[in-house]
Amino acid sequence: MILLTGCDLNFWKMQGHQTTMVASGPVAASQLSLFYVTCWVTFVIFVIVGAVLAYATVKFKARSDADEHAEPPAQGHGNPMVEIALIAASVFSLVIIAVPTLRGIWYTHDVPEAQAANAYNITATGYQWWFKFEYPEKIDGGAALVSGNELVIPAGRPVRIQLRTTDVIHSFWVPKLAGKVDMIPNRGNFLWLQADEPGYFWGQCAEYCGDSHAVMRFRVVALAPIEFAAWVAHQKEPARSVAAAAGATAGPRPQLATFKKNEYGFSEKWSDDPSVNPLKNWLDQQKPAATEDAALIAEGKALFTTKTCLACHSVRGHTGAFGWAPDLTHIGARTTIAGGLLENTPAQLARWISHPEQVKPGNKMWALGYSDTGMKIKVSDTEAVALAAYLTSLK
Ligand code: HEC
Ligand SMILES: [Cu+2]
Image (cartoon, rainbow, N blue to C red; front, side):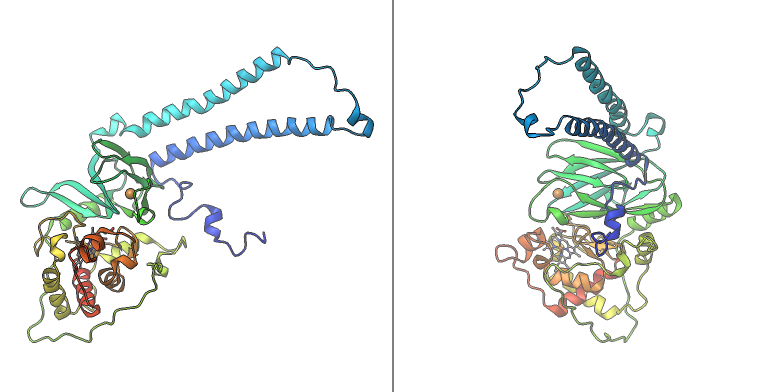
């Protein structure tokens, strides 16, 4: 008990964000039940072997000096019946594990036939160190609807995810829903998952892929069908524009908050506390802030072009067309930025924009954009604050 106090209780209860001990969909449930079968079988073996070992240790231990120096007893060649029985018992326990394993492999491989027609198809692409998601819906002009780092899916419906990568091997893992399946160059892997109820789930790259592998995260948001349809319809729209009232002047400019290097990027509302509903946080994030400063947003919008952010990012309807970096059209409505590493608040956005290298080692925005060998972009603190205000307004 003394050991436990002072430690994170959620760790011991195994209820954290990325626990596999909570299954929120059929694929994760199948994997979890297989885990339990294996645990129980090995536990029974452990108890039997342990008991026999303890019995033999006590029963045959040397009890006196004379015992210790006595001749060893006559040696036998084992008992064939015991050996056959042990082999049979081993085979039997392997069969107990193998049957549900094979059933699980078949079940998790692809959406069950009865539901295949209802499956929703998404393509997920791994980039060092973030995820891109492509939806089956098309935006005007015929391109696929894309988003980054937050995968929104319909709850209660099977989702088949094609797994691709643009660079090295990544692995797609949403512990409470399904995983892990690798994203391998030149190979078309896929997996399926389903969230039984609307919810908010943490995902993580599960294959070492370079500098920032450990913080290559993403989120899955499962919505009821009607909300999901509304989300898709909104995502298809171009970026939101904030019009300044005639004659309005910019309010006091927020200061750039200071952060320590590697400082954790989430506020209290993202705690493991079960009374906190992360889906509510996500829904709150969809609404524009009441205190928007249109003049500051306009300044940020202009900076987005002059600071050449558009060379890598696109804000559909405003600027940028390449989009090999995360699409920022609706970035303001996401709960996280930088591959799920930071909470999406104006302060964290400005932190990221002013010094991405201090937050996420090696990230490509820094390596190819800001570093001395890249495009040598320099963003001042005041500019970062304006850019953050602009991006926050993109709901
Ligand atoms: C050289 C290409 C490049 C340039 C230029 C660039 N970025 Fe990025 N940006 C990236 C990449 C790549 C990422 C993903 C980094 C990661 O998460 O590892 C990113 C991530 C971001 C994110 C987080 C996106 C998300 O989905 O979480 C924001 C916000 C952002 N950049 C804003 C900007 C702004 C503002 C500028 C201009 C000052 C800019 N970027 C310039 C490549 C670039
Ligand atoms: Cu990865």
